Length: 109
Image 1 (cartoon, helix red, strand yellow):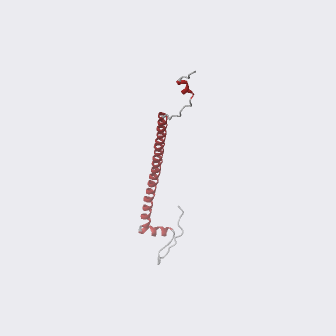
Image 2 (cartoon, one colour; image 1 turned 90 degrees about the vertical axis):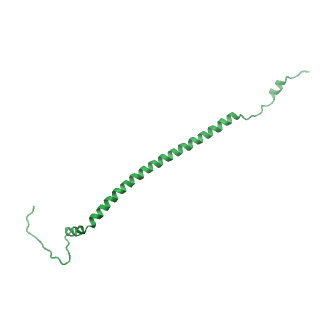
Image 3 (cartoon, rainbow, N blue to C red; image 1 turned 90 degrees about the horizontal axis):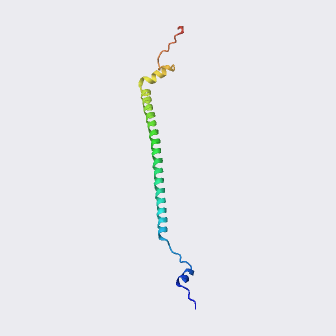
């Protein structure tokens, strides 16, 4: 009778699938690291975009403030009592009841 050594008998048995927890743990940590990196990068890009938009809006506000000051100055100048009359006289208008005079024969300058 021939006996098979115990070690050989075990080696012929199909290998048992075993979970390699150290590899699985490393893979899980890699996935978490990638997810965190993505979140940090997306937050940074969003902050950069918001900062650029803020600078653009600040420039627009400054431009509008300058235009507002100019318009207020023009409004004050045009609202002065003598401005309307001076503009009308430059157009050749006169007040009701005024006597118009036409001067002719003046030398050309």
